[in-house]
Amino acid sequence: MSGKFAPMRVQAHLAAGVGQAAPWGIALDGLLASQLWERQKAEVRAAGREYTRALENDAPPDLDLPLARCGPEDGPWHWAATCAHPDRVADRPDVHTWTGRVDERELEQVASSLPKVISGRQGRYRARRMPLLVTACGTLTWHAVGDPGAVADLLSDVRSIGKKRTSGEGHVLRWDIEPAPDLDVLTAAHLHPDGTLGRPTPDHCRRQLVGAPDTSVGRAGIRPPYMHPARQHELHLPALLS
Image 1 (cartoon, helix red, strand yellow):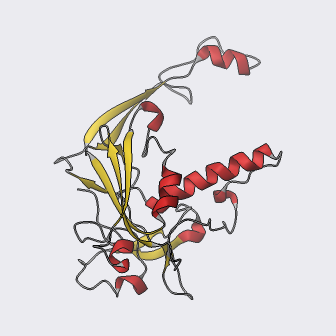
Image 2 (tube, one colour):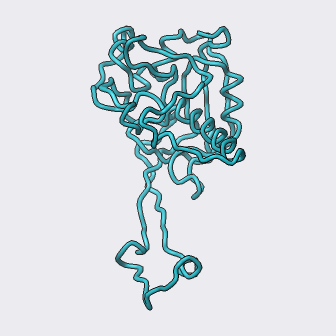
Image 3 (cartoon, helix red, strand yellow):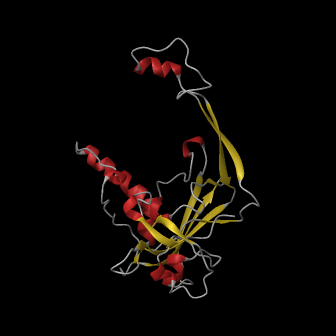
């Protein structure tokens, strides 16, 4: 582990909560990886080359995140960071609504011909009105083991997180990244502030967490890109959002 790496606490102060895409919180390593991918994409395109998305690679490369690695050398490993833990969460999620409808004037610009009527009630161009579950909370907290300065640099450009960010959801007011000398490395890499399991965890790591609550086991991604088949393993799953 690098000499710059140490336990730390990361907090996002939110305007009105966050739209979650999974039964547990947003992964910190996923946020950091998305920022690095965006920077790499800009550099590749500026050089006139074609960018290949990580999900399109049979064996996606691991980015050099400013986090420690955790896990056995001969088994699945993960970045030493948890998923988001909401503080002061409401009794139940807020149900927001997002809408969408096709812009017929834009279709006229890109199509050689159009039907007389484009139905707003059926077909691929129908109007949509969909619910969005939002976790109403003031802050999200992550634990991690890494370089606080480098993490702060990557997160400085993140203005919103979660689902439907372009619709105003998940707006981040500010980030706080501070060393956490009260946490040991094992706790910072795996547990939420309330002591529950804070990330999808391989059995090798779970056996070392003395006193952590029992968890269910299921197939999940272990590190970014989380949706890639090569990242899927049987893991101990983190505590679900209430």
